[in-house]
Length: 290
Image: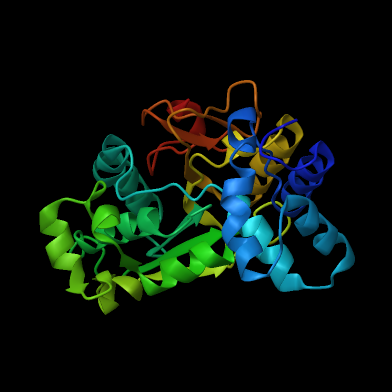
């Protein structure tokens, strides 16, 4: 028995549904949480247990039930300025590199892949907004995508509980960029306008970008993919990366042994660059930069 009181076949079906819809697999330490995670879904749809849920998924044409089931099994853990040192390096180094590289077109595109409930994208939007004088006259596109429609719905609203707002967000920024309401802390309209959130499966759908992305966040998402799915994901990320761009992964993730599409940045610790066209300082030829 894999966990709970359901049959092993029910767990296998649910795990297969998750992987086929999102590319994600369940690690052993997450399998036992399936029943607990799905209890609200079963209650909402009047379903007694996991076996009955699987039967309903097989026999029903309800898209809502399928979406709710998949959504409940996803891990939407996130918080503001996660790994704060990463954002410090981006603010002081990566953005300056990209500003020089894109000085002619004066446009910057930032894609948050697997953005969950939006804290990461809002962190980046605050960071850019606080450099407004540097980016005067620029078009800054910040796009946040996630396979979870529930998470994206929350991200668009920009409303966070007291616990969520305090996770990683300094008090000064909290007061400057959020309003306290009866329902929680609401991102100010100016901050919300800076980000375009949408539901997207990064393995199968094209992200809603006007072109390629100069800075891509894909943090703590690839951990849940199988080796084959991870290779496919890296290929997708490379296809959407500008020739001279940066990729940001989670602290426990790496490209080593996973893909030949990206390599560690030789100048910015913790960031990665396209292997075929690494970021170089403007005005320096590839041979010299190498």
